[in-house]
Image (tube, rainbow, N blue to C red; front, side, top):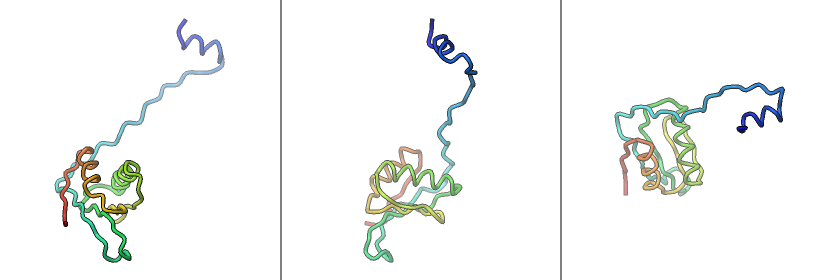
Length: 109
């Protein structure tokens, strides 16, 4: 007697349903590399890392932003085609983006 038969005995009125697992989104084709740069201006001296040059939809941009923020455990935002991540984390962000299949370019110091 396998697990399915045991479950049928426990729950005789239950009907089995098929479902599909949600697959990870495929990354869009990026012609130009994403630019990672460090900036302090206009933010009261607070350092941020900007990721510019994304050529996809806003949903894809938010997906990438969320992946970076949850992996590093830091805050940030994504709007107007730019991802803003708190702190100077260019090297870590570039590694995450490379693992996701994006080309990156470091700009500035």
